[in-house]
Length: 267
Image 1 (cartoon, rainbow, N blue to C red):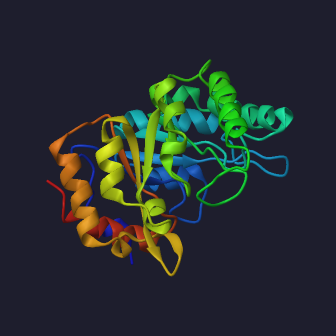
Image 2: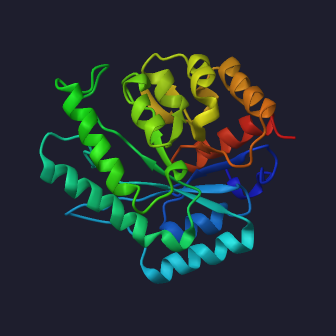
Image 3: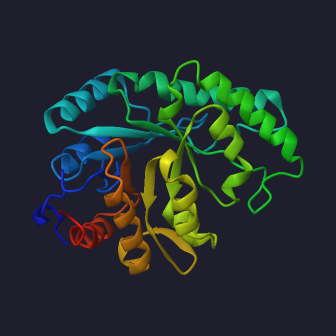
């Protein structure tokens, strides 16, 4: 399929429609150039570890800013995945925070629409830690450090595999925002409708992607039609240009399919 021939969906919804910075097999700038006139927001998926990094240098950040200004584009920044904000060892928590702060500092010129952060459990599952009070307290300390540099509403805590109500008090107490991940809700058997009812007023970013054979980040053709319709209808009822909906996929063909699905809801 050739995405270049697809109709742009820019400015076609009462929210900012976006996708990720890894759609074509190239670096950040070619991907942003490829997408800038077709979507409203691009999620910059950045990583920073001891072994490797894809943090943009100053020249790249300047080019990203120029394209954002030219195309009325915003960026959401996904903070590194290999972070453990609630870890039992203080040193691990501190390294995780520092890793995120390096990304935040490097992308500050872009004035990101939001930063996406994971509160990883000590392990996968409905109970994220054998010592839940310690795990929660560790996240509070980590959040307090990050909020010295980020507006709380721009820090969006993503829904993962465990029930979100376990961390709801942290999100509320620090006035953080919610990143509702529709694909994760489907993958782990949670009700998207219940989560929308409970958190819609706090949601700043929504990730949408399908699930096939136990694997997520698939095309929107794999999202049950009634769930996607419910989501779009709820967002239409409360139009908010301060909300981003990201098609969180990493493949050109899947993006073609997903854009086709979303075009059915465009105004």
